[in-house]
Image (tube, rainbow, N blue to C red; front, side, top):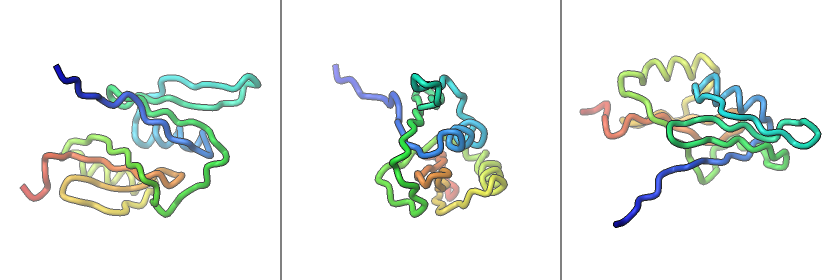
Length: 127
């Protein structure tokens, strides 16, 4: 029997843990699972639920902010096709620039420039 791997977690290095946690929690609606702290009590990571996967925001103040969307990863989250306009309105209302759209997806960046998408694939706007 062949086992197909399924996503477990995505770890994202962040410069501003508070801003990024707020974005993923309050803007994208991912429930906060747990915060982790250094021995001195300073926050070092926040873990959020994303379906069966965990998004781990890991503080790394040496990672430069990248507003030019040149990173090699993309986190694509699911949305229903009927929610597309709602999500566009929400993102724009939060001051988030939609960088690109396809018949299946809306593309944008988080506050530190990590590329994200909301997708309703395989449901297309053109079908």
